[in-house]
Image 1 (cartoon, rainbow, N blue to C red):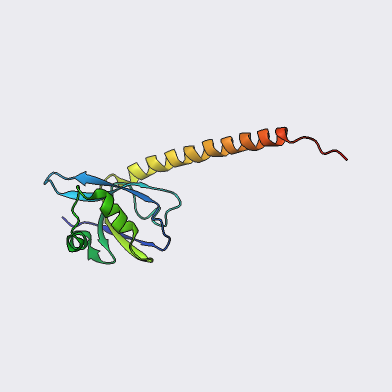
Image 2 (image 1 turned 90 degrees about the vertical axis):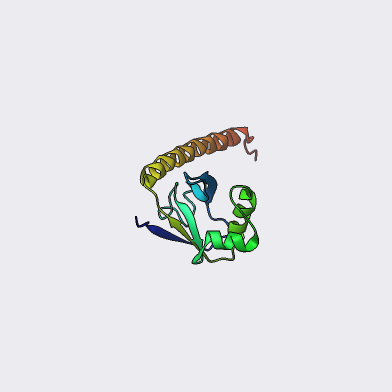
Length: 137
């Protein structure tokens, strides 16, 4: 069956995506997107569960073979390798079924985190304002 692919062009130092290794049925390891943070340039394009297939048009498997890295054993080094690609970099992901559901769930969690942080910041700011002694002329 034909796969669908999406491209994310990353210009910033951080991709804004957390990656994970996934072992597939045929015992092949792939680099899968675990989380796409709202600040990521790939947010809305790349979604959790997508599989990194190519970097700048070159298959990830070829690039890793070239530098002697292998998943899952070299996972930390593979993450570092992907992160170290010169910017801008085009990351091509193979999409998977269920990606929209997983991403909407993650977005709701990110929204909840934002609300909690906002409330916390307001409380801290209010406490700091209370701690300031009144100005004396």
